[in-house]
Image 1 (cartoon, rainbow, N blue to C red):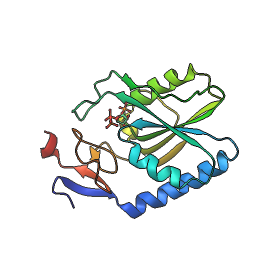
Image 2 (image 1 turned 90 degrees about the vertical axis):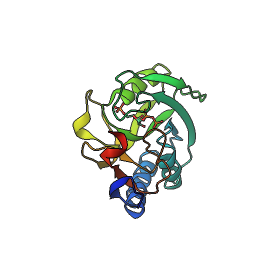
Image 3 (image 1 turned 120 degrees about the horizontal axis):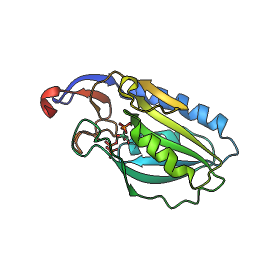
Image 4 (image 1 turned 30 degrees about the vertical axis):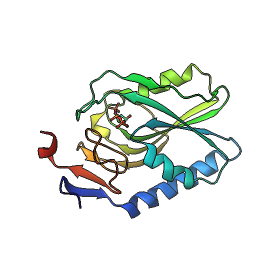
Length: 178
Ligand code: PRP
């Protein structure tokens, strides 16, 4: 285990089992709908890469970039848009793919932003839900795990751009960021 991690929360097998379940469910719900999965950079790319391979349906993929954390462990509270997707979303079924929902500010902002492109539907697929950190309510349609209010890294999630490459999701030792 990486020396900066105090405990592994979800190992590779547990993550893959959950993603198989999510992929099966999405494949049933979106059969013949040719959804577009929009991955929110950068944290969700690892999740997206596994999730699309767990889905058996026809779909497309695109990317968007938001930022609210910088190099800190708490949201700055203001969300900004850094990269815009180029898919025409009108009448498309959109599935937003996120690694983690914390305060809910990023997803709430993104939902409002995407709505203006008149998609047929928008659903949220989130791997980790930090339930107690929520500041704004957001309806999650597909969820992996609910987690406590701890700082987690790995499987795409970072602290100051580090640890995204860990294959598991682990709790970061406080001494690394305090
Ligand atoms: C993380 C995560 C979400 C957001 C969730 O992104 O991927 O986009 O924070 O937090 P919220 O619910 O409090 O808004 P981050 O800004 O760390 O960027 P990254 O994905 O590039 O690591």
